[in-house]
View 1 (cartoon, rainbow, N blue to C red):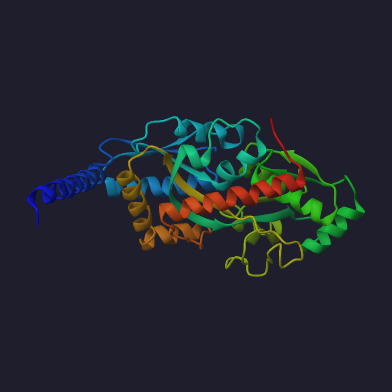
View 2 (cartoon, rainbow, N blue to C red):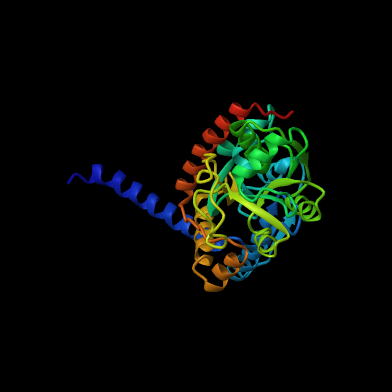
Length: 327
């Protein structure tokens, strides 16, 4: 072979090898300093509890401090935007629930971040829905009975959610439209105070996350009428899905890790590997089961990005169909 032609090819191969070695070293050297997991919710809710579990696991894996920073407010926008505009080196990581990434873009005319443009998806953790709860002394015991009761008592029932435009708000609005019922929305600043007031009888109904509510359902402090996820929960096998109860719903929820878009791929890969390695730890999966998380998909970052893309379309269609917008 002509040596003049061969030399550029060998040079290109050498450069590729050097680039690969540099990328591998970058991933191995990460993080090198404290990692902050930003949670756009108050402490003690489901999102926060899961984030703290992974902070502990990742800290041990990295042999480095991993802390949780709760930055609640504006329907999760403040915390998400804080990460979007943060350093793109993997030291500021977002752990959030689906609504901040796939519902907010459909709700707000002006959002300071664009999920597909400003973030690199890292790992999806959990998938499912929310429970439709009613106060324990409300007569209905099934979703169909609840609809009948609401129709017989127009504008007399209210429901809580963890904020205007939240998943709980939109799911109930979707149900209202399908069923032709009227309920007053009472927005709260988080899921926990919503559930507390349901238990206390201050509000009549509401959708809430499963991690912090199954035990109070089992204790009889509230009643669960339906689940918005794709399949019944193993922990509450007698509670049907909304679709099974006659009111189809396909917009599911999830939790996930994200980093700013320009974060090096090697760092994204290392984070993904360590997060999913944690899901192989029996102690971690047991704790997640205790938090009522049993559906644990493990998509690659690229696959998770496609989940994000599809959910943006699905939730946008739902928001448009029920006519909810926020400034």
